Length: 269
Image 1: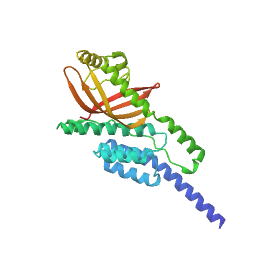
Image 2: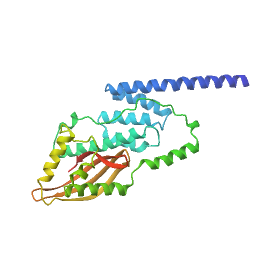
Image 3: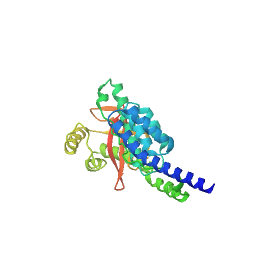
Image 4: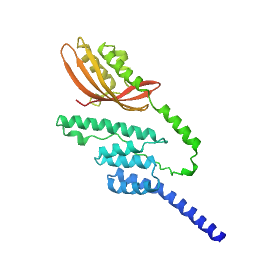
């Protein structure tokens, strides 16, 4: 009887080992299908892997990636929001979620203006390439506790984010160019400009030509305060001697060397 039990155990371990070795191969196969545009086939394989690894964020991220690339933005956002957990790939998860929100905001704005070129734009998403087999039995309570504690260090205080947006608006209003441009990430410039230098020159010219600038920021909503991928929504009321308007904006930012820096700006109208 003991011999039979031993044989059964050995066969079980061998099957488990073979299965775990197949999963990275299947994961890579699914990625290849997704990259080639065969989203349905790729998702089918990923969902099969997910059945045996229900909390694997690598698989979940890539399912969301496939959904977004095939046009299902709402579903992609729902997947990422539902399954975010502490793990090695959380940077990619949050970056994808932040970029999905920003992209969705742009789509809403373009639809409001009846601009139909949004289909040609690429969503800036990341596909996780290396599969890691989950072995829940090796995760101790102490490891989970340490992970939860480390997650608390991943976020920026919301008051700091609010203060940053108000300071940014004040620098703009006061034509404090040095501090205004210092609010942006070092390599940031909008796509319609060839370089940061040409963007800065254009911004400075536009600000300099306006008198009595007044900027009011209202209704700040922090969608994500994750340090590496901050997403802020707010209403911006701009008034000068020659122009005034009110817009809703999405601003993406990151905490870089202890300071918040803008990495993207999107007008929602």
